[in-house]
Length: 201
Image (tube, rainbow, N blue to C red; front, side, top):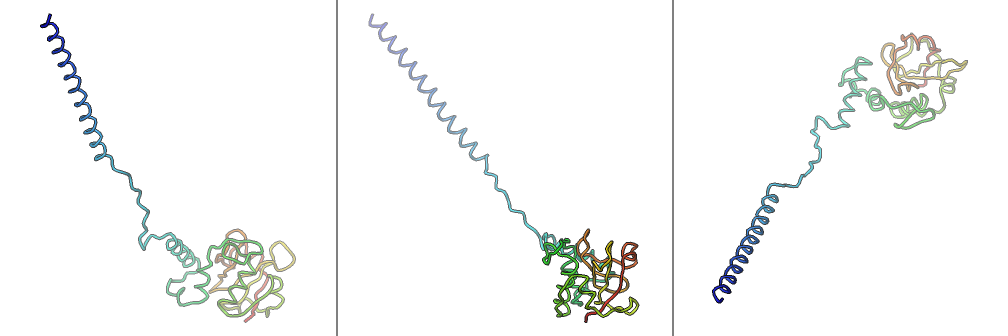
């Protein structure tokens, strides 16, 4: 009887020892597995985009504007830097058209001319295209020089559009469709609506 009791106690002790060993093994395994995951799983750090001096967005935009102006007028970047007029045009090139607008967010043809004359020639002009035509000294296109004004009557019986003459037959203006741009008086559209040239300087 005593032997049976001892055998039962021994069996129970061995059973609990095995269970304890298994529990300890599982705890050690779990802790080791977690540490391994912590070492291998690194937080993802998002790097901020960096721009080199060559690829800054505003500089790319300025280069594009310069390239467009150079090709439109046939001038070099050196000529643009030396000319107050050309530098001004480059700065405003591509500004969208906005009726009654006088800012770089949008400008119309007469206000663009007013700003150009004030900043480049230090002369204050007031009025729309028709009013500028009335106050300007009328000259023949063959006598017009860079900086003189060119006027157009576009589908109306009065002067409705104005630009500033540049070299050759080119002129800068705020077009309703393309904004501030350099165009040619020899283009069929502008040749059709050209009305005259004037001088205010």
